[in-house]
Amino acid sequence: MDTASTLIGLGLLALFVLPILLLIWQQNTNEKNRLKTLKEIGSKNNLDTDTVEVSATLFLGLDSKSKKLLVIEPNNNMQHRVLDLLEIKNTKVSTLQLAENRNYIRRISLDLSGNSQDKKLSEIIFYDEDDNENNNASERLIAANRWNQIITEKLSA
Image (cartoon, rainbow, N blue to C red; front, side, top):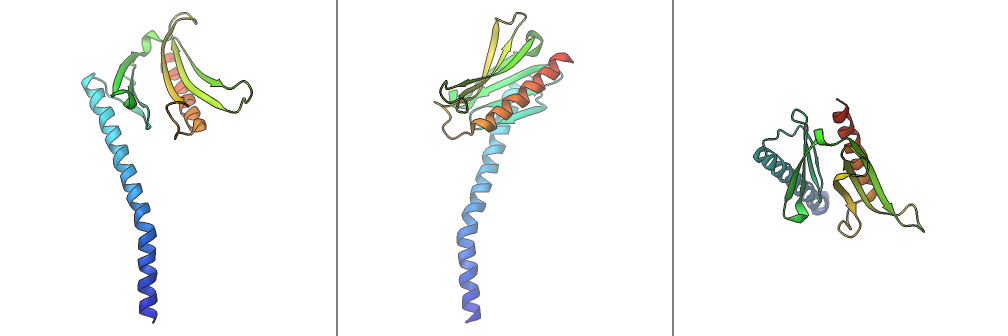
């Protein structure tokens, strides 16, 4: 009776643990593929990305030596752009919130501007409620603030 109970217990354990392990393995594989894609596009543009951010809707890579930022939008046919940090003077994290509920964030972006405050060179969208139903807005806000700090440090150096 003990052997049968043990086998049933091990079978149930495998039944519940194996799908979780499979999901973890798939996530790691997807993450490696995204990072590989970022590195490939970076090398095609002669960039050696040393600081990277990989999410489901945005790939960012920073080449500290040449001071260039690679922005890839996987949802938009892997469109990419290379931003020269030497042209950027100011960065700012912008959030669009509902007027009636200030805790509800609809959009998070990192605005990169040139010499004058009014001239916006580029906008990197970290979160858009219409496009990213499964992303956590607060998590993307932390990522936007982190990249704002990284770019600001590179601008001052």
